[in-house]
Image 1: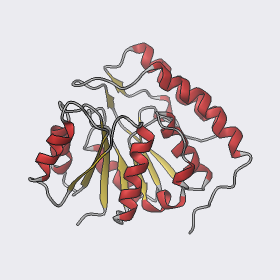
Image 2 (image 1 turned 90 degrees about the vertical axis):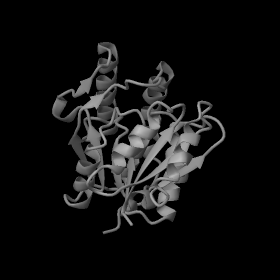
Image 3 (image 1 turned 180 degrees about the vertical axis):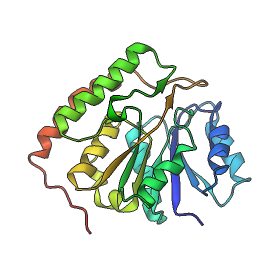
Length: 247
């Protein structure tokens, strides 16, 4: 048994899913993996179910009907992980933009260095660690994170990062029913809510590599949701009482 589970949402990731699963299972520390598949028409779920015969005690899948959004996929995964009593719960992409080896560093930040949430950060101290992104996207992402930091008051450089480790207490304390964003603004909302609940957040520098195989799910509407969503989060925070971290 392990204390850690990696949640990986998938939609049409047949080129990557087996390789990412095997890469995580090859690490020196044991992790379990939970795939949340949103009805991928390319057969991603079938690949995972075949691999479950190889890794019956450590690989799990939740299949959903159609694309329901990144946020709802993670919320479903968080509830599953809480129910199954994992102490450390990770978010990671399927496309190798997040290096599986960095799971060990995120784990160490939470398990041994006192963080409640560890973020795999592309922009720690204004250093941009991104490979093979178009320069326009790098600039947009970097300044989006700066905008979020200014509006929310969080002292986090990579506010939109999707590579994270949570202590289970964070997910049990955050009122998951009140997390509303479904796209990439979900990543901001989770960080902001953890911040308002008084949890310790630590950024771990990583190198983010653009996907090689498969198709990116990023589009302009995602950034639009995040831009407006941040203003809504900040305004709503003035009228909301957040549950606080229990020591």
